[in-house]
Length: 104
Image (cartoon, rainbow, N blue to C red; front, side, top):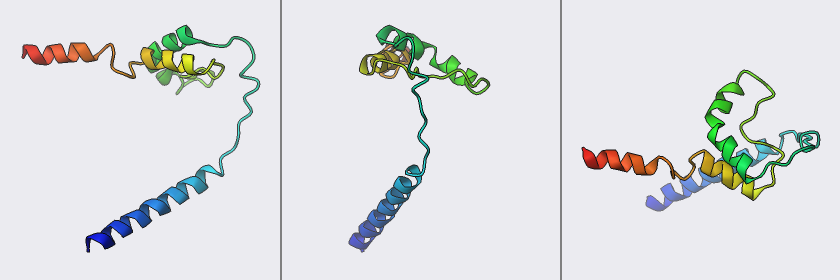
């Protein structure tokens, strides 16, 4: 009984995965060469963009020329700065949250 349930779950998961791959295979490719001209953004710009990401997220709903993440970046250093700036590892908020729990 348990083995049949496991096989049924595996078949469902595999079917959903194949459907997901088929759907994403139909997506269009965007030509971004026009976006990649000009200044290349590095670590410090990634840090700044991570800090202002919540504001950008709201503004991009109303304006087409605002994005959360810069397309013309230098790769891993920009992504690392963005991650730190957005609090992706909880560096800025983790200590304060634990302090308030200890005082109560």
